[in-house]
Amino acid sequence: MSAISIQSVSKRFPNGFEALKGIDAEIRSGSFTVVLGPSGAGKSTLLRLMNGLETPTTGMVRIDGEIVDRRKVRHIRSRVAMVFQQFNLVDRLSVVTNVLTGRLAHRSWVGSVFYLFRQEDLGIAREALCRVGLIDKAWSRADKLSGGQQQRVGIARALAQRPKVILADEPVASLDPVSSEEIMTLLREICDRDGITVVVNLHQVDLARRFADRIIGMNGGRIVFDGKPEEMTQSVLRTIYQREGIEDDTSLDMALAYA
Amino acid sequence: MTPALIWRWPTPNGLPPLPLVGGVLALLAGLWLTAPIVEVDFVRLIGSFGRMLAFAGQMFVTPDWEYVPQLLAKMLETIEMTVLSTAIAIVVSLPLGILAASNATPHPVVYRLTRDLLSLMRALPELVWALVFVSAVGLGPLPGVMALAFVTVGFMGKFFAESIEVVDHKAVEGVRAHGAGWLQVRLFAMLPQALPDFVGTVMYILDHNLRAAAILGLVGAGGIGYDLVMSMRLFQYDRLLLIALAIYVVVTVLDRASDRLRSRIIHGRRA
Image (cartoon, rainbow over all chains, first blue to last red; front, top):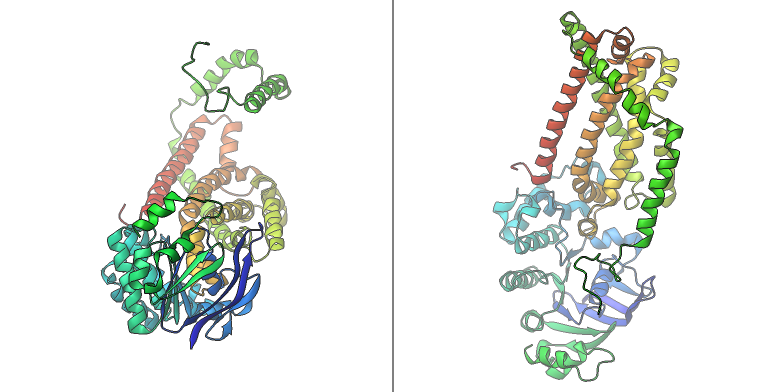
């Protein structure tokens, strides 16, 4: 069964920019999908629609059959976690408190007023931190950690939520190659072991090839490729990364020669 | 070929921006022309230099040590008024600050109304509100505390709101994306980020309120103010010296404490 179902979704921003021009896709439960495409192709917008951070202009997104709309957004978000390029942690809070914010969806505001969590929530947070190998940093402040470590805290926060789906928007774009490898391996392992559906936006073609079950290629707000990594040939990459109005794109040739 | 100039401004034509230069010149001309309205007169200023020296000279007296116990009692009352009014103001300002921050308010109308309420509260100085409260509840420190707390909410609410408005939106989105509710987003993503600014605001306001509390006695609203004004009117410079010194010491101690506290909060426990 499909965990995420996107039906003729388009998105036009108030400034007139059309980020998505009719997207249809079904994402199978427990799969690892990578969305590839140049900057401005609409990858981020597509991911943000799945979490209700944006609302589609037309069409609809369903998570486990439920439509993502404004009224049910908190309920949807309690099952759909998100990992960001800039980590989006609260710098001033401890690592463990950041992970605990992943539990807020399941708790009412009454305890939150006093920053109170349940014992079981702390257990879940500890478990998530062990999983990403940062239990020894639990009481450090989030901004004292390196980029790769902060991203692992971001993943621990996502895990603490006990989600069905993890959406990762360029999770390795600001990390060095070794940290990138760690983060991608971690996401892949979470997908395989916990059966969590993972959707990742990426810029790196090689990482997409190695980690994905399925690659969706986007360009100019449309899906231009949808298939297995081994089906992604040079000519497919050319379609994904081609730029409008540029005939002989030597930069494109050079970039793809090493992809 | 024209000789190359070594210096230039970082503008397209190398000249200073005309509106800026014009504006500054116009402002200076305006000030020069209007200064006589407030009787700023350099000749008179220089002429009165002698009398200023004479006044300063009168401060070189033996302090009136007999007065110290009463001074301490009055200073303690002043400090208590300051701390209490600031504490009351913090409790009231936090929710108002959230309502008055454009990125945290539940509705633009609420934002507008809260902003207007806050500017109304700080429209008149403490001394005027103190007069109002003295006539309402009678003489003593109570109307002083009420007046201070009232005006402080007006300032603190505005400052809190502005600290909330500049928090990093990414962290807010990070917490929101995980399904946190309205209040939870404000408590876990916005307040921690605004905290160092809050502490700075509170410390500045403590400093300001201490000085404000020091003159509220003028209208019978408690504190050291009554003694301050009386010693000046009765030419008791031996007392005035001690009062000025006491206020200075308390303000300085407060300033040092505020620096320490702020750096601890900004840089974490081990700075």
